[in-house]
Image 1 (cartoon, rainbow, N blue to C red):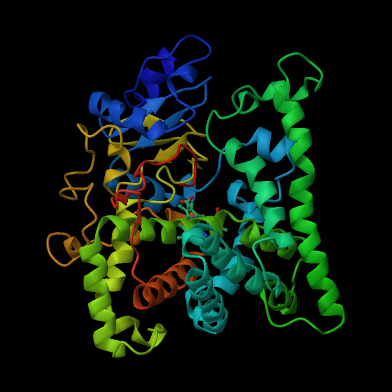
Image 2 (cartoon, rainbow, N blue to C red):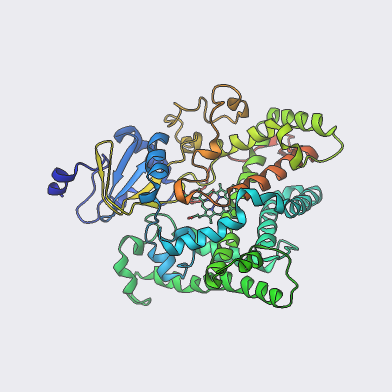
Length: 467
Ligand code: HEM
């Protein structure tokens, strides 16, 4: 290591690890960003750790993130090996976690062709239908708003992907995705499973003491193939009988050189739920913000009523006349990013930056540099307060004044470089219509307790990958 240091330069500073296991015990499994905040104060914007010999940097500064993950994306667009998820649980078809290679590129291309920006207006009718259903459900059972929001996101993506209509919360496809995700989400974060840290353990038998990860993997493996195969074969049956309406599967099959396996995999990922979980998450955070900031809600309502006359719902044509609603969405991305640590990137070549050496295979985690994510439970340390003042406050007006040139939607909320979220245009349109129409049709208020006091929900994050 000393020789490497002398010839290639130093790796960035970070907590000193132990022999062999490195920093494995320094990285918490849950809410790790709180630890990263503390490390930033000690070591600076670029922190280096080596859990079990695996080089990892934590990037805390937008300028560094943009340089390394956007500009040098050709070498930082890969993903870390995921032994538990991909090799034991059968998720190797999931292109979100594929290495940056030709096979990934083919999936990304087919996905992009369908979900690219210019195609989104074709999907407005589907988004409108799902949103109308959300409004009806909210009118009938407002306290179940979280279930209704999840159904909204699932209905849009399943219709667009397979021409499948989600009729109820108990929809079979929705529960398939839910079951699969319950197994997958806990194992996609660095260090979340012992076998990702020590891959050789994947060869020990399931009965071996301490091999509970193997038994967990075996239990969950069938959900991954079920999720990918069942909806796809039903869509294919509809295609065979000419009863399918245009959707991702049918459109992608019509393209020259269509590859069935790639279309099947990419469809499975559109539907898997991570994407629609995130859209649902943005809308849930919107409800939280409106409960806490009624003055923002009132101002948005005023803006909408001035455009619609208060007697119709806003629609996509109104978007350019409703700038404040857009600022609310921008502020949601800053105030509560749905993936505060983004998704891990991995470099494919050694590199140097700011005098530091990054070995090939360095994993990069970026703390989405938007504001108060990191402050929760930790109000004395506010990273990025250099960018946003009072980051813990939900204040859409900040983008009219001191932060007018910034848009958090292009500051990491959707990721970076060649891996930037290819579903972002669909997500943006779905979230916008739901938020604008809910603002027009309802007033979001807290429940009251028996003493007529508002019951306000907690502002705390959970501890997973997607909030
Ligand atoms: C508000 C909603 C959403 C948010 C905040 C979001 C955010 C993200 C983020 C942070 C990444 C990782 C980017 C990186 O590694 O640098 C990502 C990747 C991805 N997202 Fe989204 N996303 C959303 C909605 C969607 C939707 C609706 C779809 C599908 C239609 C989608 C499909 C994907 C896919 C396929 C990837 C993996 C791309 C790759 O690895 O090449 N996302 N998203």
